[in-house]
Image (cartoon, rainbow, N blue to C red; front, side, top):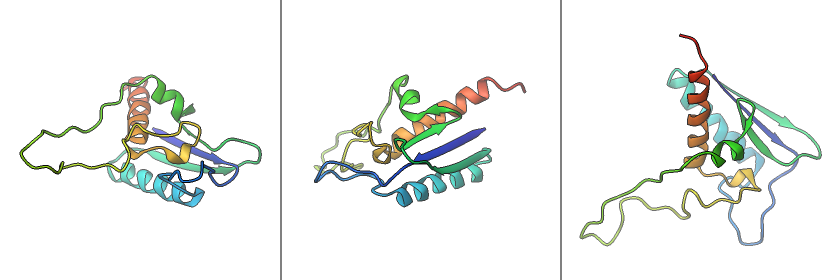
Amino acid sequence: MIDIVYTYAAEPVTQAGDGLRHPSVQDMKDYLDSLIFEMKMAGISANLTVLHKEGVVNDITINGRRVTDILAGLTIKTLEYEESESTSPIIKFDRAPTDWDGKIIEDLSDTLMKNAISKAYADASANRIM
């Protein structure tokens, strides 16, 4: 029910000093492979296709829709923690999960990717006759 296509033309390029969450095409492939594995272990039908095409912008589609388009229609809720007497939070992020460069798909956070997959899965389930 989940068909992910990662299309790339070249290695991701970013501004000097900016760190990408997935700094290379291979890192992105490995990340997507691990997501597919998790879904299959949970009993979800999932497939990953990786395509190299010259002259395109690196992108990910899920069930035919671009991830950026899926995310544009969502309200993203981030993890929260309760303030306590401790000065260190339970959960720390180097960068906020919603802080990403929308022009570079390899900078997509795990939280945003899983939200996009969840939305695509819900849409596919809603159209499925049981």
